[in-house]
Image (cartoon, rainbow, N blue to C red; front, side, top):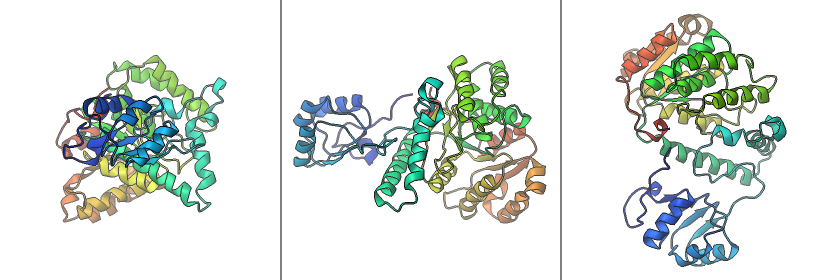
Length: 393
């Protein structure tokens, strides 16, 4: 997947993102072309080996966010008009990161030799969050906010031009069940239709939809075989290590899976991210995460059976559709008539809200995942191209 494209000319008008530098290669390109970093934002790039280039470049108005650099270089660029926000030592995450997470990054150290899930960056970030979220420390709060804003920026860059369909559903949906297999087939159908699948990035229905998108470019039997393999570890309880290891076994056996997006949170620390989303936008603030996921699902949202969290997401999505605060209403497709009319009778209330409003013809209740895929494609205007970075392997 290519890195985001930025203008390397500080004189060219544009948004701040046109002046972001997020890799060492981009840094070298800009300096070589212009001898200037004026007005640029250099984000989480290790510049310890670029001291001479830093000292020789114009840095007026440049901002360095969490970039390791030689102390002499840091002092010099400050003196010449740059702002330097140094890396924060001792953190299990980088608050200034320029790119989304990958499953390999968050699960690094998962193997028995590495210490299991408790030793992974994902688990250590959750532990840090648990220690700091209630102590009232403004510095910890600031770090969480900076991190989440950096993740949002990276997510926006990834999804430029994408037609995104959200798939929502409960974390309790177990591997090896018909419901899990159906959610996986749904993700595969949507991805094969050219849409970018986005989920909450966790276990259950979310993992299944990301798995389906992963299976999209592969032959059909792959998904059936993967489902059988995963069924040996049906849930992330009692062992996240075993649950995640089974997913990585699938990825190792079929390494050329397709891309999708997961947007999980450390707020639900008992829910690990899943390994089938190629890009993970993980947040500390759950409200930011949920609103961001729904707001970016511009091709609509499919709601699989779930409990309180999924009900909340339905009405979080219905509210901007009702007021048209994000523009024209986007499709909302609820799956499983019995679930949404009898077990948790959400559908009648959604219908009542939609009555005589423009969202009325953008909501649907269906019985099967096959109907859900057809319906969201119809309501969103058909299949989409894959011109976004999220649609490029």
